Length: 144
Length: 480
Image 1 (tube, chains in turn blue, yellow):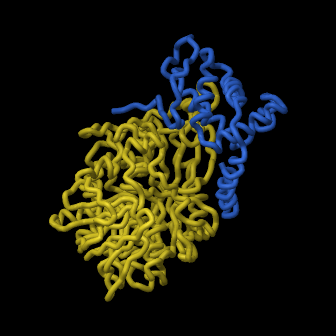
Image 2 (tube, chains in turn blue, purple; image 1 turned 60 degrees about the vertical axis):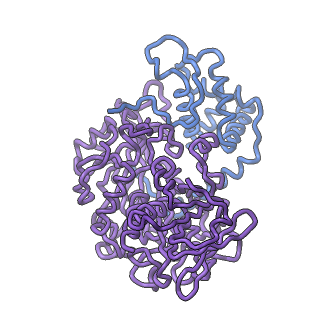
Image 3 (cartoon, each protein chain N blue to C red; image 1 turned 135 degrees about the horizontal axis):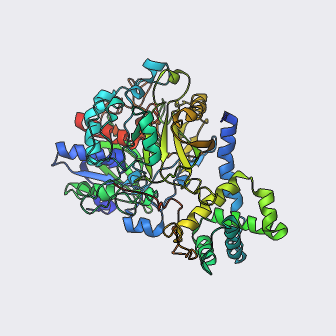
């Protein structure tokens, strides 16, 4: 692995963090976000079967709970998906680091908000338990 | 707790304390142990936000830090908590000591300055602070932090990843000391490894509201919240009174001794507003650089430890490299809050997040300034080349550190906007020319004014700062 962090790169990263948050404020939540997010998550997890309504329930809670900046970014993805479809979205933004981070953190929050990890051997579809707001919840932790 | 209305504070106190975070409360703890009959007033800008309030509002304070200063330099966040207990509410409770060499950076490596306090000076106070905070930690850290002879609580369970690295480098990889209980204690539960430590769900984390109730409820301690101190009045070379705003009124309270422990942005501003600026007051603002990397693991399941951050790797903590680049420590994360689990089906846990702290050399051009407004102006010149070099060195060291693990790939991820370790603006030193306070944290000229908290740190080191701030306060109160 080779990475060189330059002073300029660091400053740009710090500025970009603030600029991204400011731009997000211009967007608003719409009801379409829920169905978009549910479909988007199922596409990211093609091998997991969810109970009927589980993804929609999670998406509703997640959108109600998550930060305005993040909701605004979901709105942007939703708009792009409307234009080019979810597959197009994957092609256009699949390699984007910010989108990748969004995918990983949101999938993590979803999975720890279901019984997926607590019933690893079951054939039953994963049920939504309730939103654990940050993706730091660790169902794998062990204690002495 | 004895809360006073602002008008009821307008009298003479033995000790007036401004701010109620680590620096202030550990000072009061030791002060009252030595002077149990003295009357103490704590003035806190923020409110008393109870634990329940903090949970219901998912915040530690109703005052976001960024509305309390104007940022005019390189854009950068600065994080702190305004409210009773200060940053004890929001911290993540990681509690390693600073390294002995951190106090002698100039002598050993020709960088920054030496502290007027040595590691050995702080040893008894480190131990006392660890005891008060009921720190959980290992018993083998004495090789890194001399005279560290064990902790009040056993360490949190290491991950499988940690055990492999520990076996390969036993003198460099340790369970990280943390002020999160590994065993239940009284009404406080043990850590649930939730990694949402700013709002600890079990009470495992040491906070003022959970762990200092006896101090805050001491019969000689009075507290006035929503009291923003604006200035100190100096007469005949001593602070005579503090003026604070509450609501739309100003109030004045008098005292024999004043302790300034707001934070490293607002403490210097109070001095500047008091006509006590100039020199290096407000200068040398900075903090460590915070970066994150990830290692993709091949078949090794991670996240099986007992707390959110399980280990500290000190293999790049000290050495000749500090002549050229900042010290670094690597925190092995047992949580996936930054970047999530892996997306590949069934390989969710095959990822290791690593947080890296990088030392910086504080620069005089960075600082807090009074430019005539309601709030201080912050001008940050950016991280120095010393920190950037330190980051590059740390990232380059990762393959060696992670050699004991089955690693597919290591990726540098990002630099985060703030570590919440704001420091440097009222630095301690040997004279009024190079510093604001002396080694006892007493103002060089105003001898009844003590400055506590991280604003007195003249260098950053690469460790978390709260334990050292607490130990310094215990010492400062002990020396009066």
